[in-house]
Image 1 (cartoon, rainbow, N blue to C red):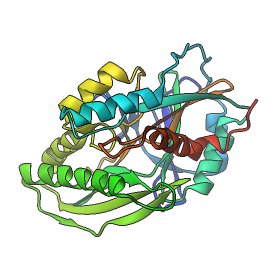
Image 2 (cartoon, one colour):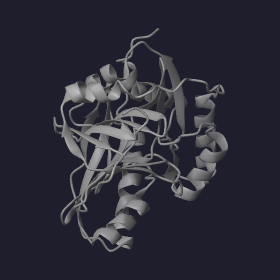
Image 3 (cartoon, helix red, strand yellow):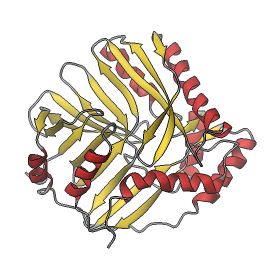
Image 4 (cartoon, helix red, strand yellow):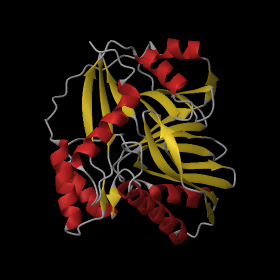
Length: 321
């Protein structure tokens, strides 16, 4: 089975594993890059249930790519400082620069997958092999979920630091909430907004506000999905200005990090998540990604530490060489 596009995943709050392999079928597993206009990779087949023992057998057959990339050394705090300077000049109100970290590890892919399943029951945990690329993750954030005539999404942003949420985090979160509601109204969606609460996501906690919407039909719901991605939680506000800044200063290729990922079923339901807390997988090497939301109240050193904390979602389970 090696070399065939495949994915194994677990939905939040469930224990059952699901599997899809490229074949003739009616379901899909979609992996869309961060780039709004990038081309998604899609596995078409039938989504079936899977035991952990079967998952082990499947993943063991995946050929691990060899790590060859040479990383440019990027001073993340300098990028945050420049972000704040541009915000104070009025170029944008928020931006979310990301960084990577490469760790050598003896932890096998399947051992890491088992650990993410057991440790993060409320996350979307997945591992995929697509066109010789392997990625693994435990995302805490849904982008859009469709269940019959009901849609669900959420504003997830503002990370608890030093045990409290400061005005920096509450401001960051409110910008995301306002942005989502503006899209709902522009696209004529009826919706209900839940209470803002704190959500634990591995080693960190975020402010979260949930929304429930009435479906406007699958075609309009797909338009909503495209309008939501990428959210201010992974890019910034306004989108065009923030994205332009990232293109100039971020100096990494995000690829599928902070894109969206998940199953789309033949009955037109889907469960799509923002691809966060993830890593690309190579032979003996993991490349981790994380970003931090920057606004006028940001502290560059704290934003760097926030990315470190987010990477610990995976890094803490890796045995170092």
